[in-house]
Image (cartoon, rainbow, N blue to C red):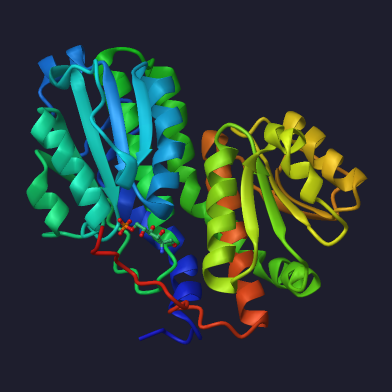
Length: 362
Ligand code: M6R
């Protein structure tokens, strides 16, 4: 069942190129700059929509944070992302002009179901982005879109993060085209990048041996800080979550600019920093913050766009050119890093202590 892999998590990390091809299959028409997601949001609603709300938990929440930036930029509509257990519809909102999206791999997460039901009761239009046909969330919403990543068994969400962001990126392009806010030329360029994503992820997977070397070198450190800006922020947060969840190490993600506003006091020569230094993640500015950490003795591991070089990094992982999707490739390196650190420590990777794959209590 694990097809020769010692853990489902590693198998699922390696399934990402296939999962992404399935996510994209039949949905993209680059020449016509069109996306077909099989969701029939009425045109009149798309014209009047003033706010998109995303509700989700854990890794799905970080996928939502990534996507929100794309939706705002392509569709020119205010997009908020909330942790589902904290979500309220919000005073002053007009339900008639609001689209609330539940992002959930399992479709069974109680907090997310609770949130989308609150949106529904308030009168908002609701959409589920899920991996699971027939799941509870699909019955609670007006429309559902499937991410088609295939079954995910490991408790740590991996391939579903990439497929969630990809599906939501398609939605962002579709909204932008429908609303007339995204030019055909820009849509084509984004769709080309999406088409290139499976191959780019494969290149990261092919460099796994370098990640193993880094994991061996750093697995016994005191803590790990993940830094990013813009689209690199959700990836930094997700990278830290993965390391906590399966390696039981102290890890935190920060918007890189925040480091100097407090967390820098924690940085020592025993706290490596891992940074997203790619397109879509303001790499030059992020590197300035990485250097602040290095000055305090920390080693720096960076995921870097193929056409850039930051010579002072202690470890660099190369990210192929896929535009705004490059932070998603950095995420694959972070997944491999967490996996190999956990493996060095002999952790129960597929079933980490205290956690369940789907959390059906509020
Ligand atoms: O099934 P869902 O996407 O709704 O699950 C949400 C979270 O429970 C989930 O992403 C969790 O954070 C993962 N175990 C993280 O790897």
